[in-house]
Amino acid sequence: MKEKYLLAIDAGTGSIRAVLFDTKGKQLSMSQREWTHLEEEGVANSMSFDFEANWPLVCSCIKEAIAGVDVEDILALSATSMREGIVLYDNDGNELWGVANVDARAADEVKYLEENYPGIEEEFYQKSGQTFALGALPRLLWLKNNRPKIYEQVASISMIGDWILAKLSGKIAVDPSNAGTTGIFSLSSRKWESEMAARVGIKDDIFPEVLETGEVLGGVSEEASKVTGLSTLTQVVMGGGDVQLGSAGLGVVREGDVAVLGGSFWQQVVNIKSDVAPPKDMGIRVNPHVIKGLSQAEGISFFSGLVIRWFRDAFCSLEKVESLKKQCDIYEVLEAKAKHVPVGSYEILPIFSDSMKYGKWYHAAPSFLNLGLDADKYNTVSMFRALEENAAIVSSINLEKIEAFSGIKIEKIVFAGGASKGELWSQILSDVTGCEVKIPQVTEATALGAAMAAGVGAGVYKTLEDAAKVLVVWERTYKPNKEHKTIYDDLKEKWQKVYEKQLELVDMGLTQSMWKAPGL
Image (cartoon, rainbow, N blue to C red; front, side):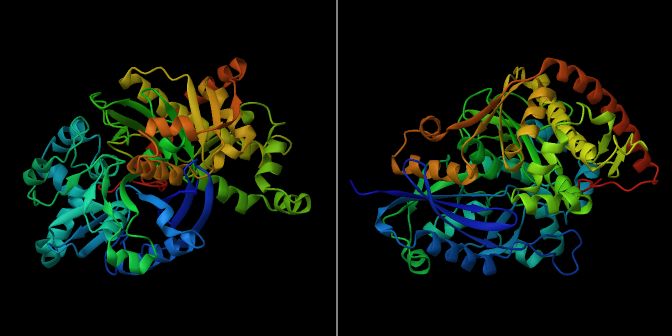
């Protein structure tokens, strides 16, 4: 029987990728292009999405990924993207304006909404699980205030992954998992809450059809076929947000399933029912999942992976030389040495990402505390281990916050992303949380999740849950050490108290915050 294919398009913050899979989930080819989201001239903290420059990059990736196969054998395609990024269209479906995920130009609008509509952010959060900081309402208000001619033409809104699917199919639609990050959306009904826009003076008639992940938009259009090389027989299928589809690609598809995604930023996600109300203190973000009937409670640790990379580049020149000699990854060298550092790393306290406080979120100044002058104890290797332990500690705190409001007891964690390659880091995560930690074999979970969505649309799989049963394979499992957990529990308690004191130094203007949410 002739082989059939599924195409995934992954629009990340730093690059666009097209990945071709067979129907058994095997990756066959991948093409990638870096793209940049530039600050708009004269607009502080902006990060524009350049759809005119980026569409040719999408087309190039697709052409390369499908080269060498009969394009009529590509059953379906889907797309996933960074969340929060939006594209606006006119009445004819032409793009007007777009921003990438962490565009923070609307800080003044966030403050305006909070000051002029007291309590409205808390009210909207209880419906949407989102705060204003990276939501679409302040950005739309910014556009209305600063680019009124563009604003007047706006007839529709979508997310960046949906923009790709619209370019390929000619139909603008959204899915709950990504559209939910606009904050103009209901967790329970999985539909737009256009009344939110009307209440703050924003157009309430710009919200397109909502399709569930795996539903078909249509075939590839004639126009798109010409520029991508795709067949018009290929079905264009609704995708979703990168974290949620990545979770599906890791088998995190049932209520109570948990994942820690260890990339540049770390996400801790827990599947909960759609009717579970977000916490009253707005401490945790809640998003619709790609699985109908489920949401995901999400904690975020800022810069955990980026901090490790900075530390490697700034302090680990000797280990770099050693890794070149051994022809292995530098992190293997560092972890091999860090295994000999006692659990707790001599109580070195790294101060980088705080645990998640979604309603009022800012970080202390980056620092290491509790260093001593004994070079045998306080050195590059012990500081490296302390960073790995700290990432696990912050994840544990976020997961405990989710347990507190959701009622879910976490016992098993799927650990994925670059950090999960580290055997020491995986064991530390298990020891800190007291949970079994499972490492999946898949290396491209987000793209695989998009391929699974395409497969559902093409009828290869009945549901995403069924696809996960077939495609997700486990590579390693780690069991927690109870003695180590006791040590980490004490360290976690100390770290939280110290971090609060470090935030006081920021409040006094004596140190500079590593990051602040827009509007603070």
